Amino acid sequence: MTEFCKTITWLYFPDPAVPFYRLSIHSRYGEVTPDNTKYWSVMCECARSIDDSITEEEIRDQAVEGLILKSIFTREQIVSIYSTTLNYGYPIPTLERDVEIARAHAILEPLNIYSRGRFGGWKYEASNQDHCFIQGKELADRLFLDIPEKLYKTGLPEHRG
Image 1: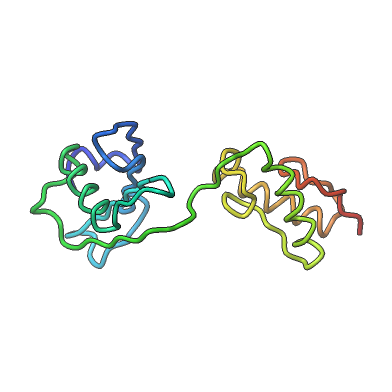
Image 2 (image 1 turned 90 degrees about the horizontal axis):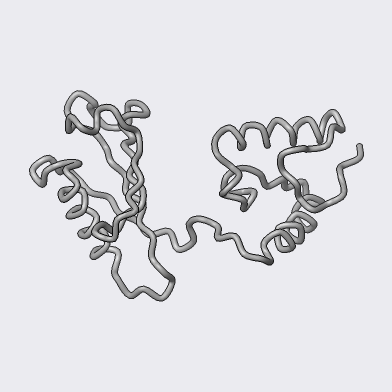
C-alpha cells in the first residue's frame, strides 16, 4: 500500500481534474483481498449527469489516471480493475421529496415493508452509519413496544399496536 494511504480510509476530491468525488480504501476496513500481505483495494465513486455520454470504460480509465495523478498508486501497482455503473446512486433531495417519501411509505408499510437506512429511507443527508443503526432500533421499538420513532419521520400517523 502506498505510504500515504496507510492512514486513511476515505478521501473526498472536490477537484475537476479527477472524475471521482470520493475514494475509499477498503483494505483499511478489513481483509478484502485474496492476500492482504500482497494486495490492497481502492474504490472510486464517480458521478455524472444523466445525459452525459461518457462510457463506463472512459470514466474507469479517467479514474485510474486520476488515482495516479493524485499519487494514490502507480500504474505498475495495478493488478486488476473492476468497474460498474449504477444508474441510480445517491438520492437527490428535491422540494417534493418528503411528500413522495410519505406516499411511498403509505404503500409499503401496510405490506409490512419498512424502508429505513441510508438508501432505504431516501434521506441520504441524515443517514450516516449512526443514524442507520438508530433508525433500525427505533423502528423495532415502534413495531414491538409501540414507542414512536423520533429520528426518522415517514409522514404517516404513528403506529398503534
